[in-house]
Image 1 (cartoon, one colour):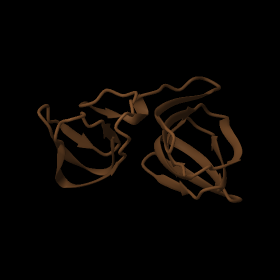
Image 2 (cartoon, rainbow, N blue to C red):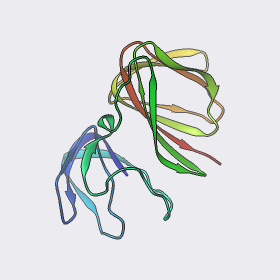
Image 3 (cartoon, one colour):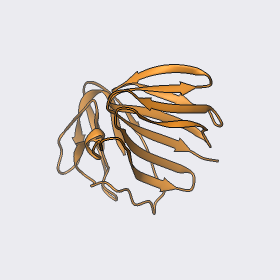
Image 4 (cartoon, rainbow, N blue to C red):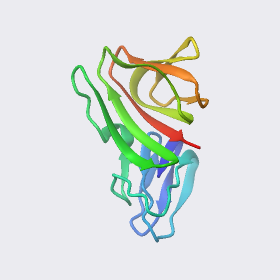
Length: 159
């Protein structure tokens, strides 16, 4: 899974296509894939185990923020990768919702995908908006609050 954080590029596969900031791409299994930078591209690549079944369509460019909807008064989540040592979860928060304080069971990286939220971490509040990221250390006490609609992806590595 590639997640483009900045810039753009051309996907080098049989289908081809452009990919730009805020979009994602699931690489097809068993096919060589590359990317040719436009003016520059920064992306995160998440590699899973050989038997992992991601709940996304391979070979198509898409926006992670569009994978799940907002639901009035609720938090919606979708596990994309759920392996023993690696979790990748998408979450949408309706205004006024949030997660109470808890400890991260491993190192975590937040990708803000849409809107704005507030992350509490180790006693301090941090505003976060689409296009920004935030890291948690293992056992770091944190919480999430959405005063406006907010979508994020969570990458969690476990020992």
